[in-house]
Image (cartoon, rainbow, N blue to C red; front, side):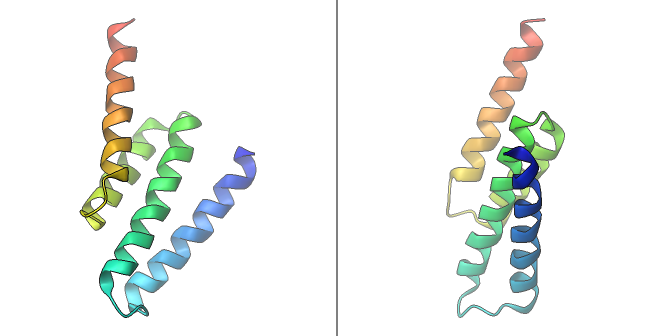
Length: 90
């Protein structure tokens, strides 16, 4: 249910931001991975609900925060590919 997913994504982002700010975890890479995951998940939600600009921003941020994981970069590439296909098919 997309209407339930939005608040869940926002809650995960708030938690990840709080941990990133205070760095509760023993390693910052753990914090970065969780923050990137929260942004990437919201990006997926935004993409499937049609907010492509918001999805792109979330994927770009997630890719910058956690450069060791490819998930956000792959999601961003997929989004750009779909947008390019949509424009050329008009």
